[in-house]
Image (cartoon, rainbow, N blue to C red; front, side):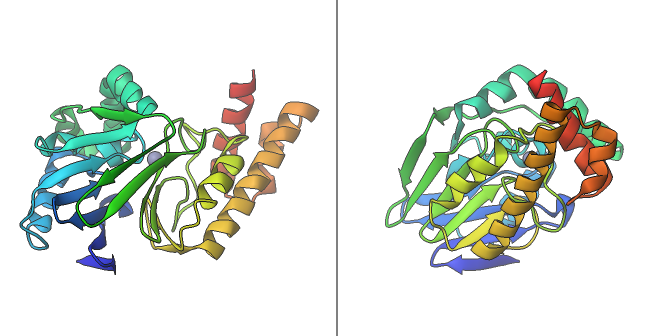
Length: 260
Ligand SMILES: [Zn+2]
């Protein structure tokens, strides 16, 4: 089921990876935010879209380069694919190794990942860009390092698709992240002023829930600072929370490694 969030704006929450896909329908065509984790999942999305509108998908926006958001790109050959320039760079340079990462995550689907045709964004920007869909404008903005080096915010009216800058139903993922920069980036992203936030995974966020997550990520950053500045061992610091120990360990060791 597509949830209508505003006039012409929808999201669909898929059980696979609890991923959210955004849909914005303008007079000139359809824009989608993220394309799911494989070509097979993207084909399912295309079939689902046909129940919503007969208009063609003319624009795709990748919120960031992670495989679960971009590996369906190849199934929208008629669309301009937009993303941050570092999103394109990552997919061009490391797309093939991302396929191995994905297969390691979901080994049962190794063959499916093997068949993915890496399709990086063809339209890129550094700070901001906007698209006129006919009667509705969609904006993209970049606010700095956070969950990856290429997270962008996509807005349509008072709604914003945040990719994995925030995460609902599970802790944020720091494996490719920038724990010390993330709070400032998220603060700037929230300054865009959106009322309702669609995370990359899970349920919708209001600004209050997003602020709570910002405080948690600030706590992670403060602990990471202590590891770097005071030599607090990651093993001990990982027990301080606010997230489970394995998540903290990933965040803190990543911060220490980036600082080295
Ligand atoms: Zn991600």
